[in-house]
Length: 225
Image (cartoon, rainbow, N blue to C red; front, side, top):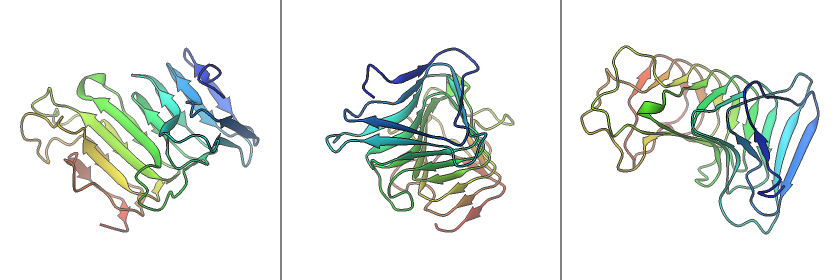
């Protein structure tokens, strides 16, 4: 796969059903394999279906396997998504992301490898996008970033834009403001942007060197700090 032959998903209702098979995609250029412009659901109606993103030895830069455009929708229901390359963000989402099941794996997924991101989300106050994780097994760093610098306070009583109700996170999880983009006024515990009501967190949670996202915590299992 090159930049010219990457798979681009346009329009609504796109479904990639692995049906128990393995889809192996290989790039020697560090190309982004999938680009989601509006909607894509990945699932496996069979057993053992997977997508293997393989990169050649000549790839030396950080790259992204699946990129979702602003306000697009990516859903992972089942199947395995894996990368052979540690300098990768497997899913880079600027829109709506829903994880219901499956496995998302990058090399060194249970260690503190800062270069291997299983999931990286990038959202702002005005995009009205949701990050919903209710299942699955994620091996690799997960980073949730937001830029809410234009608002004085996250609306009270509304649904949090980031919601985790299940799933297993085997690597580090970082919910952070984009650097220098913290809201102009103090955000309190009464105005969370992230809610955790379930799930298992096996790695470290949060990043002490960056501003935390305010979190409403009503459940979940945390095995480290």
